[in-house]
Image (cartoon, rainbow, N blue to C red; front, side, top):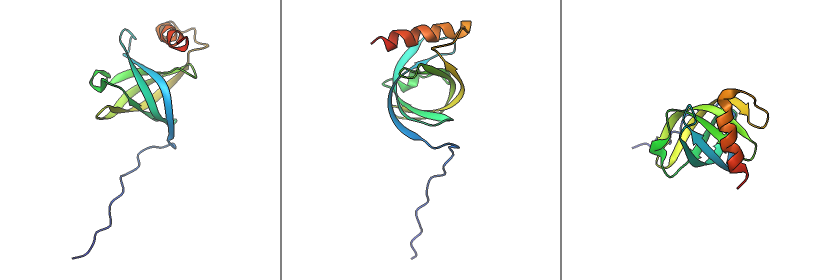
Length: 115
């Protein structure tokens, strides 16, 4: 019997993933419902978040990262236990935005930043 080499998982990320421990908030598309999360890793194209209620994370979402005051449009790619992998799309600077649609996200970020 021959030993077969163990197969490595296929790496699908385009950018390097950086480990993180950042406070975050998930919001549905119109930001009427939010959920606290921890951003565990972050790359230019994606993130892994952890939350106590992963089943409540919508397929299309906004991910707010508190420290930098940024939000991304995002979509869920995978779910495993309390962790959710998201693909990051458009990035928005909440410190400078005047976009009406982003005002609700800016208010959410402002409240979190004060904690």
